Image (cartoon, rainbow, N blue to C red; front, side, top):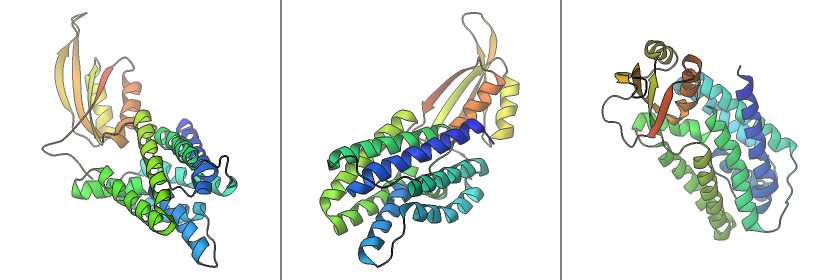
Length: 277
């Protein structure tokens, strides 16, 4: 187990829980994904039935079948750390008391979104996720070849419309503010692009190729290159990956050739074979 990655996952879960319990939940403003769905259902059950069920427990229960799906379809390492993120986030949601630090709903919407997004973005940057919707959207995008963002937008739209219908459209509008802030912060920390192209210029082309092939099931194009400054023969490896594989690729490059020059670029479209499973 990667200790640094585990630390990031724990802190990410803590930040998400702080954003929800100290800002969003007290203001009845909803976050995105499964956390937002759990938050909304917890509110509805508490208001319209004699029972109560916490957001943290619901979030954990929602993610059990998703973790099984992700284990089979997405990848064991990614799913393992994503589920750990959910476990810690659920735990912190139970431990941190729900109380408002401000009566201003806009401040709650903005600061709650920013704090939660820092946790999510940092987790994504280290090759995991906050579970739930990320994994489902990733699986669906591989089946239908639509962007992950399409499915995330669909569920978030359901949360916004339901919250607006049941608790007033003002709450729905503030939820939109939270979702916008969250998206912008995650994009700044990680990347909003679903597919990326990496150009790796290295003097250890064969070792790099074998390391990538052994740890990532991706095609690699090797192009002969020559450094202009020292007139040194090198190899340029071109590989197209998803954003969820970026952490693993960076780790491999650092292990094989820390001096390699790597350029990561947005990929708008891939025409031809691109492994989805």
